[in-house]
Image (cartoon, rainbow, N blue to C red):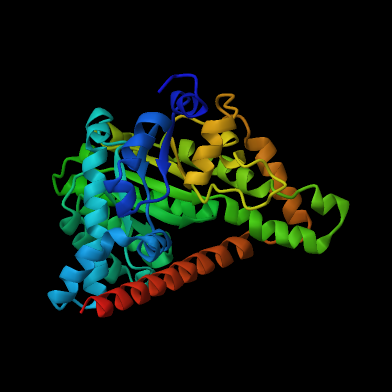
Length: 370
């Protein structure tokens, strides 16, 4: 690994590169270590879609599925065992990075069942079960930023469990997420927990914002509307970074940081470019700033490594221009609030569909193993 590759330059600019994928084959083949060594990968995120794909395409689960079938495990129990084992093994691979970065990187995320997205108590309960089962300090429990999720975030952080907040689309909800994190830290502090051990990232989705807003701009069809295509996602994320800077410079945050707490870092998710007319590294190169995470599908990671042009911080100082983009989109009659609410609902629904596919895949595998 040299310091001249685009991924090395990205890391030097303060961006933590996490891979948005995990499978047992990737773990056992040494593929994950190769990405760490060659492409500066310092963490992994997972979701129901990723595990559904891994189990559908992977023979490396056959032995464990056969054992689980023999033990009489039902499909939910089997999925819990399979996914937590992958995450635990991933955590072991990343442990040296976790130690070297004092817990900021070297992280592997696992998500609560998407069907619990509107159940605060159920989410909190499963967050603890996942944390206890993986039993690795460098695991992050993914909780969606729904209204119920906000309560679960506070409860989980208060219990000293590190959290990856997922499915954030709007700036207003992002402020709520930061507040939920700080509230959890305040409770953890009151309980005498070591705040330095509690970490969190806030996963702000990028490409899905463009996909939905671009669809509406195309429907309008004027030159003025079409000129705004593929600008909303980056502008929205740039303004999220401004929210991050503001939120962690308040007196409230400063008091917690002085007591050993960590900032909740912004994480750019959904960074695979969907529009073939847009450069495939856009959601990487346009979102560079210190203290952020970019979790990339392997295709985006490869594109960045191959031809990404890293020009340093592309976020700080962009806020006026980013606000102008969102104002111009609003002037076209497109409601930001409506779009972001729709995306949250669709995001949960898509994960539920993937979760059900995962259950179906494992059900079939269990039955064929009997």
